[in-house]
Image (tube, rainbow, N blue to C red; front, side, top):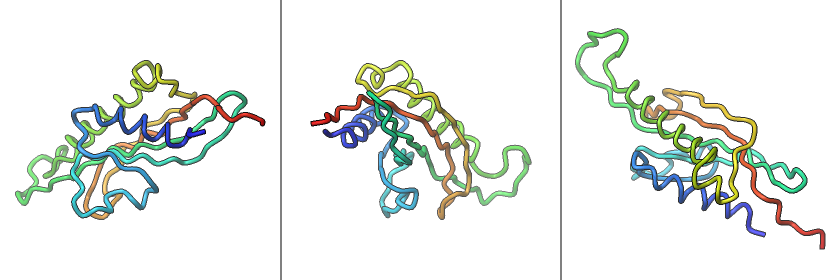
Length: 151
């Protein structure tokens, strides 16, 4: 039985095919950008909980698609856009989150027995981390076959 390894490795392999992503990591939320030499944009995979349901196992997982926000030293002239690239970062990370969602819904992940459950949400965040990272948190339920035997 290697369901935990299977789901993490399958997700990592799929995310690495997204041209907008430079690095894939996993672990708790405290592990995001723990490495001094992280290359952004970064997708961090966090397993929230696991629930066995008859013939499948439900993994509730959050994908954090994050990037650095660059702040200009110039005076703010456009109050809507501000003096940084935060909206660009949010838009790009939204695209990454949507790509992961679509891969689960109908792409290669679906055909590899990693299928989307009923719960999906995408939440934007800014200034959540120490070095002004912004992005999207995609939280989904993912179902994989329950391969545990009763013997």
